[in-house]
Image 1: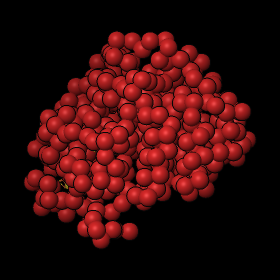
Image 2: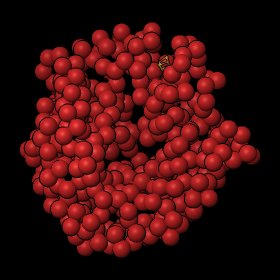
Image 3: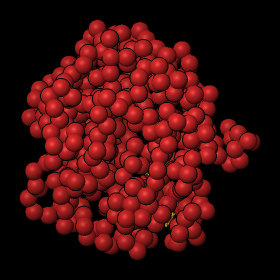
Image 4: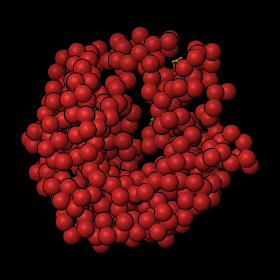
Length: 381
Ligand code: SF4
Ligand code: FES
């Protein structure tokens, strides 16, 4: 519902609560910023509770508890319980390696509605190499069995790229085997850590096109068994995705220290400044902050978006990608074939995907190696 007081700006539907950037995994395409926020900067429990209150008043219906690894927070059960008390639909986005049966049961008892488990590959050795965590895959397989036994709805998230895309058929079969109701297959989006690792992650055009055909056939074959969401590979697309459903239209993201972002990667746009829940009420940030209003609606759009029929379908694509490629967030997403930068983007993809992939640069605090303490598992209370 559009609030009259705020003109045409609708309230947000969902909140991505990044409780922490700490994580025992080190995926080279992590959506967290390259400059990770340290544990000492994290919001405390009382502030997160207040944020959930404010989000509910603002209109948010669902909260996704994410990270880093959200189960590294000792107060996760408390926060899930608070969200449930507010009537929020709660979803846990987890690597799964810190959870066991008692911890999961505590979360379910607190009111958790849904769990999304990330996997790095169908094959354990490659999955552990990509995630930089020994035995991680085996732990995930054990957790999936516990989740389905608990009857908690399960979605498997698989980020795909050059070094696992040839196993996509197996990944789909694995999701069925694990009893998931949904599989999200997302090609890597190249900002932050993934941009650092672009040459190691970029698939070839043949790989990307083969994946589209494979997903199409699997969707048909698995109707009523497994729903498959598919995020296409931007660099080989004809039109861009409607990133985040449009900037400042449906979603907000809060970082571990409290910065409020229109999308998880927004901090890569260094020309914007983001407000914090520690300084300003959430509603004020949503409706009035400069960052949220920067790319709302269509008035900000340049040509060719301004006069394009698709401008209210894809909202000009992704602002973070525009900034990553063009150095300006206000230009048409170069993933669009109508962008003057599109041919350069396609050439970049071809170049990145050719030759031997370089070694991964793994995500680490301070870019110089996470201290053992920061990456250490902290149990859920
Ligand atoms: Fe979308 Fe802009 Fe491309 Fe049109 S020109 S398809 S609105 S990105
Ligand atoms: Fe930020 Fe697309 S990821 S707008």
